[in-house]
Image 1 (cartoon, rainbow, N blue to C red):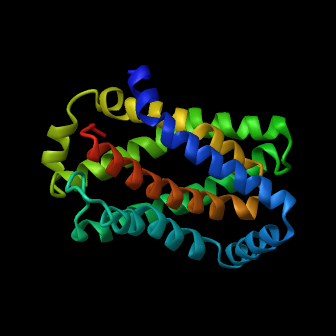
Image 2 (image 1 turned 45 degrees about the vertical axis):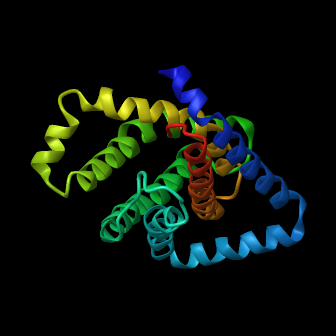
Length: 221
């Protein structure tokens, strides 16, 4: 399972890491980029959850649907009717993640020191993500895929769904997102959520491109 997850995700992960670390380098080295991102952070600080909830709804719910419209095949498409539900679910996740970043800052501090970044990343990827985020996302997409029926969702997930459905997804997420999460925690608190949303949008576009390429050569995604 680990080998399959690694093989399926290594190329898009390398693209994602390059983008994330490139943005981090530009933030600390390029005054124009730093000013632009700090302006976004300022808006986020003023609006709070009124920024993070709509931003996550767009990044996780609406934009993936729009990106999928660019795909050439008909595989794994999200229907337009699913978008409002996904936007609602991701807006809730946005509030949770924004609050989680603030809690982490209170627990571990908010300076870009290696020890602090490591503690935040480990707590994020080994506690928050596998125990809260991934189960929630598996439930959300299973509910959507089973016509919003609680009974059909329960049957589709089956017994022991945490180990059979959540853990494989979490292993892939751990491999792909851990370096990117380190970049998130290397930024000031007010910029962590906006940067996460930007990276999520980029990741969705990467997956669209990679899916189309695999489809063209007859590979499964």
